[in-house]
Image 1 (cartoon, one colour):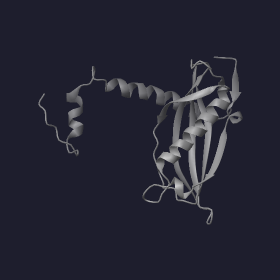
Image 2: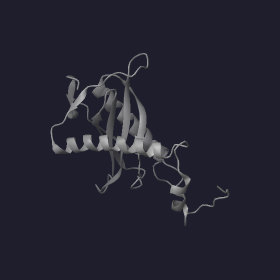
Image 3: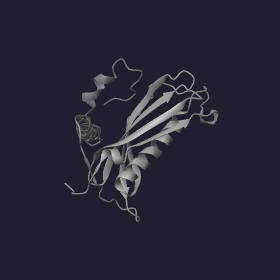
Image 4: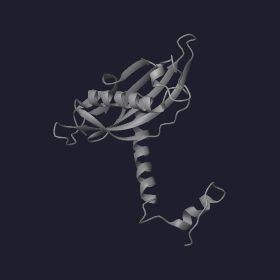
Length: 183
């Protein structure tokens, strides 16, 4: 473990932006791509602030759009470093929309961005660790470790060299699909 550690609160960020008609999709709701772009920006800023380096997005773990965002609402995004590895960080994001007139808020999504710190030559560089000061921070750190392990298991199970067709064919029964080849 590196002696170089930082408090999580020192790199936490919150941004709030008014959603404009130019951000909307064909159904008049705010375009998911616009929200993802904002999420990537705040994840970059949070990770860069923590690491002191330029950071790139390595992966995004699960983005579920829970509630639509309307034109004219305020969108607030909160970013926090939940986990630090050697050169990577998991930045947790929470997106909330607020109807300015009524004050009603909605949780729109939460996501986890894995960011990697880079030097001026594009080489991955070590990042400071994080100081865990309460049970919630420990829970988030542990959840990131488990999520990483589960992700590795998921990918290896479905590699073409190790995929077992007979094991997964029953999953397709009753699905909206048609198999047109014979084993």
